[in-house]
Amino acid sequence: MMKAACKPGRPAREQHKLGRIQLYTTTFETYERNIREQLARMLGAGGFDPARDILEITVNRWPHGYAYEYNSLFDQFWLEGGETPCQVARKPFGRLAIANADADAYAYTDCAIDQAHRAVQELKKN
Ligand SMILES: Cc1cc2nc3c(=O)[nH]c(=O)nc-3n(C[C@H](O)[C@H](O)[C@H](O)COP(=O)(O)OP(=O)(O)OC[C@H]3O[C@@H](n4cnc5c(N)ncnc54)[C@H](O)[C@@H]3O)c2cc1C
Image (tube, rainbow, N blue to C red; front, side, top):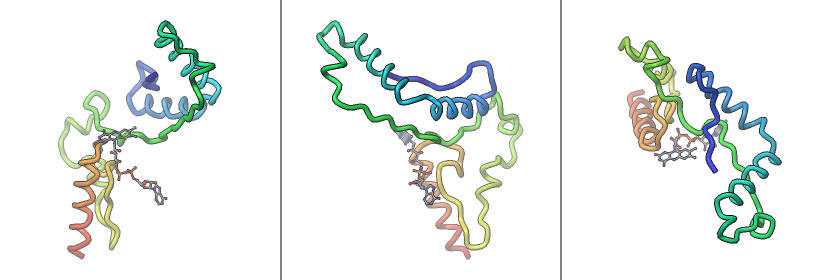
């Protein structure tokens, strides 16, 4: 029951956008039908009956599940060195400091924690 919503052959950023559109435009009925059909194929031989055994289905869609990570195949600046877009974008502005995983283009919680720590240190300098 997994799907990577993307359009092979297009640049990564474009694929992410198209994947988000696909997530939003897929109807609940389609998610439900696919879940029932896949579970029936996986578990049917063992006696699972989707009509009897599925009591409820909840679909949660994350519009922005992971921070965008730079990719040397598509992001030329990544190979050139120098400041990356996220380093430019996270510069403090007056008493505003920027935290979060996007601030370091890395999609994991340790990054969000590190960036929060950096942002607080920047505020302390003010
Ligand atoms: C399905 C899934 C699985 C993941 N698994 C892992 C894992 O196993 N390990 C790992 O390290 N990372 C994992 N991640 C990634 C991790 O969750 C993120 O990297 C991390 O949560 C990013 O933290 P953040 O503070 O940058 O953003 P978020 O956690 O997204 O926090 C942003 C917050 O801002 C709030 N917000 C948004 N707009 C506004 C507004 N206008 N006003 C006020 N509040 C607002 C949101 O409600 C949210 O609470 C996973 C992510 C997903 C989606």
